[in-house]
Length: 125
Image (tube, rainbow, N blue to C red; front, side, top):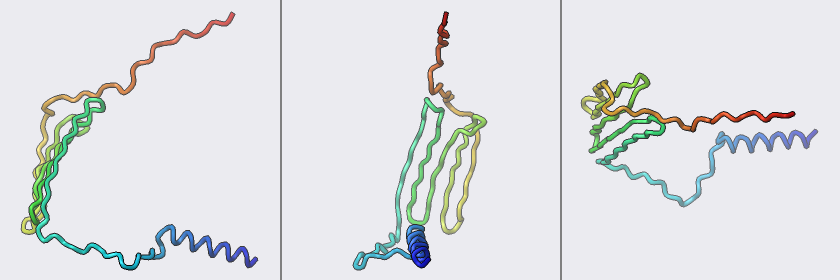
């Protein structure tokens, strides 16, 4: 009976450690990166036009300090193009303007698999 209790306690401890219920040991002497950039800056953009799946979307964003400006476009399920222009700053908060319109170039999805040709059933006689 004591062996069962010890086994259950060990299993519970292992499960608690694996599930991060107990704090993990932090290696001693490893410095934590606590630097904060006082004026963060970045810019990125991407564009996806996949004729195979019909996926069509894009985004671009620029950050200069506490000011973020950008836009993204996506083709909605109804086939219209939704474009969102946004800005965010400490004074005005987050603001977005949404425009909807037709897609400039129709992106038609192509079938993922070729049609299967009928096969004649074998004749047993």
